[in-house]
Length: 148
Image (cartoon, rainbow, N blue to C red; front, top):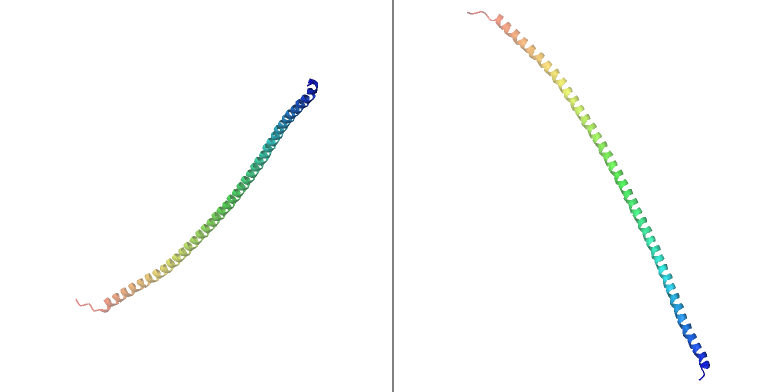
């Protein structure tokens, strides 16, 4: 056999092997790049999802805080209204007590005046009765004969 005739098939086989190895290497490199690109894309997607979740969390947190603040404001308004109602009722109650006390004072004063008038009349009657009694005694003393 001729070495030169063998050289061409050997060269072809070597070329095929080198081509195969080169293609395999290029495929590995491309696969690595593709995997790296997919991993990078997955990281980017995960980051986007994480950012979206974080934004949604912050939005939900803000909504909860807003609702809480609204509820606190309504509660405070209710407390203020209740305090105002209590103060109004307290003032009405005090005014009613003052009115009733004044009515009682007026009634007591009226009763005192009536009692003073009655007492005055009774004193006058008592004085009249005493004077009538004294006059009666005096008349009886002068009308009776002296018998000693």
